Image 1 (cartoon, rainbow, N blue to C red):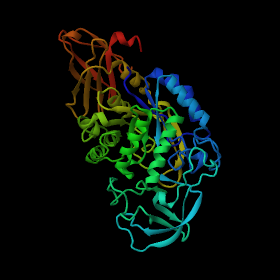
Image 2: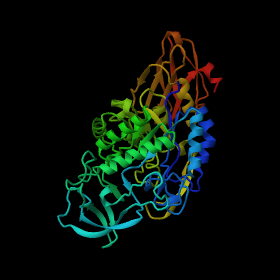
Image 3: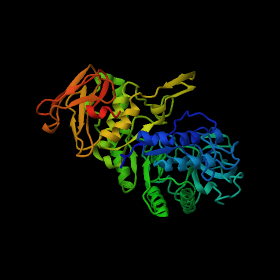
Image 4: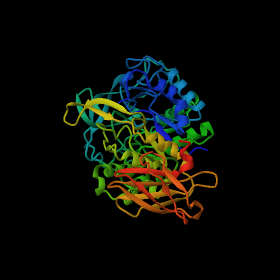
Length: 498
């Protein structure tokens, strides 16, 4: 059985024009052969910006590129037929498919409504004005292009608890909607940033409304019947009550009568916060290890000043690996995006070796790191700039190495701030490897592999080092690594299969 290896098959600046679904279809055999086991696809439904929507401005969950809405039939990534072809082709090639689910908010309402709201302090959302004002706001979603196909539910102001824009009087800010479900303020079991982080953007969904809960359960039942997917990536869960996802996931899994791999984006660098969320959801899902990503970012910025022996300090992977999905980058952390914390290209091979070749965590690979990306956007100075994200040469080899050599017991040599190593001992049937990393000068590690590996020759599977390491009569060897680099040492006989 292949080791779980997830690929995020998009990035924020992926080109418009319906290219992604055809590319996923075309690349399916290549991904399977490489060693990818699952593909995370972007939100497949219509966003407020139609054919230009990355997918996080949710408009109509039931429109998978089937209806003329928001200026286009297809989404940015293609039409419904293309989506289904991509999913089916991926699955025919043995890959699982996970869909991105954005349930926190809706954007792009079809009509305004006369509602009552109270102004909210943006820095402390628990401070809600006692003054209730009459206003018009975009809170009614009727989906005229879909004409009640699949669902007749109309989202109105009873379905939401907050907005960030009033049409009359024209005003921007954060406004608490007054309805039958909001007397107790914002929902509980959300992040405590800004006092209470229930509200994020757009028309914020009110999960305490039973009709909303039932509609979102109906939707996921329909989705599982329509798109044969195997799990979810859940967006922005720090803004959504944990009790909702406990119920929603139980319903989704009960609908298909099988487990559904689920990883949630709770973007916090505080380990205790992540652990608390897992407790709230009864460990029903996994979380991205944001603290580990931040360590990678700092390590790439600081170079030799970073203590590599502490690379897993205060991370979810270190304390609860069974609920950790590890990553080097994603669409939010890439340059010019909201959570920009890029990992410098020189360090990415080191970071990927640490998530692909170790026992702990399920690794997630980012599309530009495998295939490269180039895009333009406004920089922090307001001027247009070009970003180049080169494909990481070593990454395909590291993915292959995960399936071939990341076997057996793991032994760490995290005994130096600038040079660390770990060993996968292999099994009776499968070979292991020795992985050595340096963030400073050329270095090496003395590794004791045992007498059963005495007098053996090792080569660098990545091809960075051209020399050969020969173990002695006791199975000891000195395994070198170049400056600011990583090497994956394997028995020489397996190099012929590279």
